[in-house]
Picture 1 (cartoon, each protein chain N blue to C red):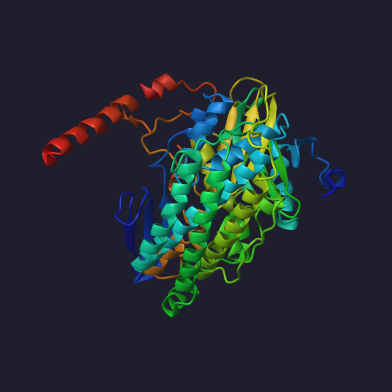
Picture 2 (picture 1 turned 60 degrees about the vertical axis):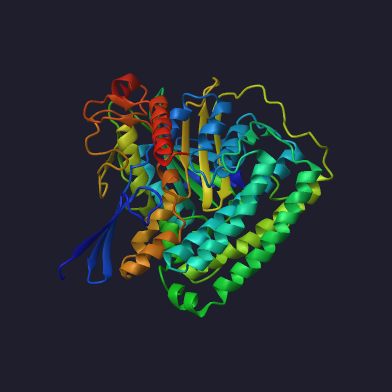
Length: 150
Length: 399
């Protein structure tokens, strides 16, 4: 895959793409805002036919970072869509209507990081039992381990 | 719509080897809807990894799953080594590939056995598990353990394979090949298995794309993907082998893919053992000083499909975020397409056909009281409990 051309093409198609970055070998990060996520993801998943791998969410210094990983199996490249959410408003549109497979991982992220996925078909707990305390998210930086682990 | 009966399977059920909960909504014998509940095995491994050093994480991820205890360290090594761009020695590459393929053989044999067991064909179960033993013995000879091998380290492997071990391994492989012929014959030529498995639990290429399913599950539906070829790592681009695919997408096709893949694994191991002779003994580890800040994404083809590890480093001693995606996470949900519309008896084998691994899916053991948040038992107390009960049992049986 000619990555330089690919980056120019995708930037021309979606002018809202903020930035792109090649990390290591065959890994491309595309930084987008949450409003353009569905459009870009639909293009990558449906039009280009890339395979959905998984979604990583993390609590970083700047806010909540959500990375959608897609794989182009013909070239071995991994295309990552990187969305940054502000800490005081951890909400994003659910990707389930576009990529059917993300339903579970979005529920897992809801459990572990407390990020809300709007219009999710089944916004229920995934890993945790129903009696896990509300508002306790183990992968957040301010999570107090002692509090829940005794 | 007629009245629906719920058939609950699990969370603890004699048929299931791990705790999971299936709810089958049935109309007569036909499954109309299926719901899966999980979380019984959640161990918080991603969280644990953040408190370990880069080197220690190997031994944590190795314990995600007893069957894939090479694949997870493999993908993690690929991820971490990509951050500073480590070039690992050729010999380590070959040894890594040997381990990966040995794992594929023993995992596929395990699956063939279990599939036979689910179908009530217990002869296949006993054969497959019997022939799996020499492979595990081989692991013990090379690594010192039947599983959780502790072979991987940043920059290479921790133990070398001696020429004597290589000869032993070749003998075992010859034997495995004979037995695989036998198993392939028993499965592929059996008219009963043909009529039981063909057309059951069909997944189309479109279903595979929707769920992001990987590995033999995808390849059995004609989707030609394999990380070993598409994004080559270790020694897979240095040896000659081919990706096995099948059409049909039913349970039989998945069995076919797994059985034929064992031959390719044997082929890869033989070439790697041959190549080991040309590399210098003992040159198995590159020196790595520290891991700079950055992002590393590593993949490896486990017996069940692509294992994905995402590691973020801030230049410190341990990962700030470590995301793990096991193949079962995207393969298990395919039951929505493969089981719904079929009969209850087909649901069992269609679910088993993706070779589900629940501990991989949840990756997260300590016992807590959720209501009070108090720790009921620590790890040391659990071990003591186990030792005490063993003592009681011994006293009772007078041994």
